[in-house]
Length: 173
Ligand SMILES: [Zn+2]
Ligand SMILES: [Zn+2]
Image (cartoon, rainbow, N blue to C red):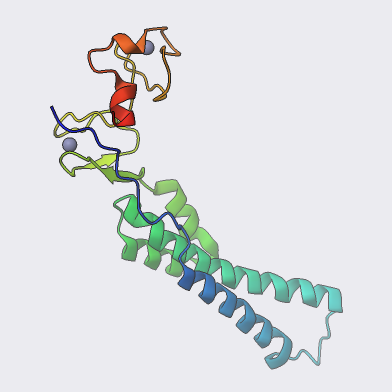
């Protein structure tokens, strides 16, 4: 019998790293500086409201770019996806298409089996390599149940009558 353990959650829960927030702020300031001071439009003066709107939008867009790259750099490893590849995609694809592609194609979050360290996806109930129970489920219909449930919400099965009550195993006692 293996020792029950809590499933290793990703230790670093921060999804947007500090450097990307700093880079985003710097990019915003730089864009504002460029549009307000370096790029004077003497010949075709725009109404001030429109100018504020455009300059602000470009600044936000530039900032968003860095936040996105920061997010991908944190999120991709959690899903066992190539970080370098996806950051490159985000940079190369114009207008945030890279980010859209990333969100469409990203794999489910992976963690490691506490018993054998195999990569397992968040929706797995059992480890594919060692049969370790990763999530509480009903012993009758095998659907996911909450660790604190007494009865299965789908079939009414009394969870305490399972050979090894899933909820107790998950709770670690
Ligand atoms: Zn395992
Ligand atoms: Zn059930």
